[in-house]
Image 1: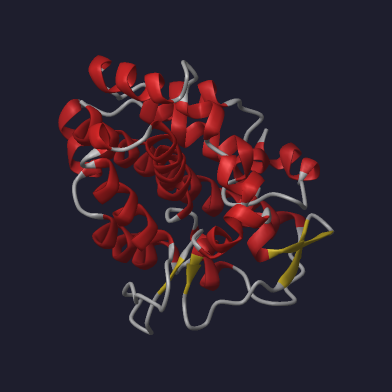
Image 2 (image 1 turned 60 degrees about the vertical axis):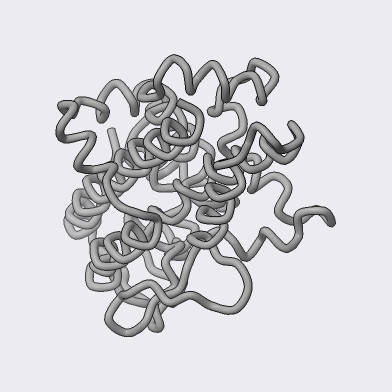
Length: 250
């Protein structure tokens, strides 16, 4: 199935693409406490967090939110350790939203709502391999199955490439951890997650190089490496988003 799905690659995706962000949000939603879910949906006017999972990609080039276009990832040093840069990045934006929402009862509804939007999207983004800006980051071109792709847009669209699943399918198939496993995966801080993600995801630059033109057999092998990494990152993002929202609103 994942090999057939490659043909449907979309060249205009952001982050994990809509399918990936919806999957992260739905896994998180299904792990919210009833109290947190009720309080969050009050600020979202009854809508699910899934509804707003890609909101930041929709508004990033509009005048009021143009500054947020730089918030969708983070930089590292040569040792793949998170390196704060001037201004706001994805990690700092998550931290700032968490700090604001720690006092959400004293904020206006609009501020609370937009801060939730930020968390729902950016927790997913910092788990996407190509949203990690290593010093050697390069969105180079390569070929698999006789089709040309650009690394960044390829990974943005991976959730659509590896499965013909909707977000409910992702949750059904991936969200099968025990309570202790979920707790362990969700532990840590955004900065610790950034370090972990950077260490985990750096392998994508070993798997394929600029100008590679993979045979059918090597294309199969490549996609079979991509799939488990993408699924792992989506699942961790969902559990971590749920933990943040439960702590803030639960």
